[in-house]
Picture 1 (cartoon, rainbow, N blue to C red):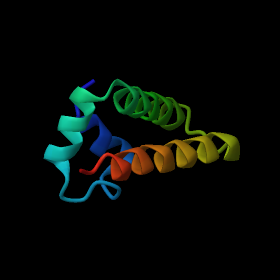
Picture 2: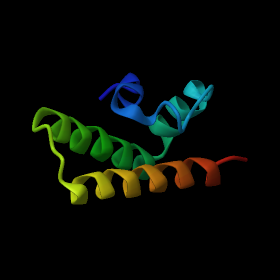
Picture 3: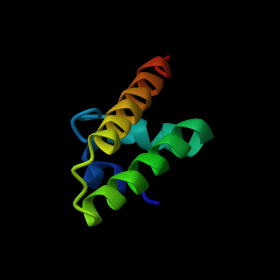
Amino acid sequence: MDIEALWEAGLSECFAGEFDRVRTLFTRDESFAEMCRDFVEINALAVSARSTDQHVHDCLNGLKDEILTHFVNSRP
């Protein structure tokens, strides 16, 4: 997965102006990278299935919150 996929999956509002920092963390922190890959995969499945399942959307929102928290806590 390339880092641009995060923006295409709707995480751009979480990381506004932080592309380089996100890319650095993505390449150095396997846990962060795994959460991001999971988000992109779940989002793609939800979009392709035109999912309106609230559980799927809750899962995506929870994962988005975890990703953002991990990102914020990684700041030096």
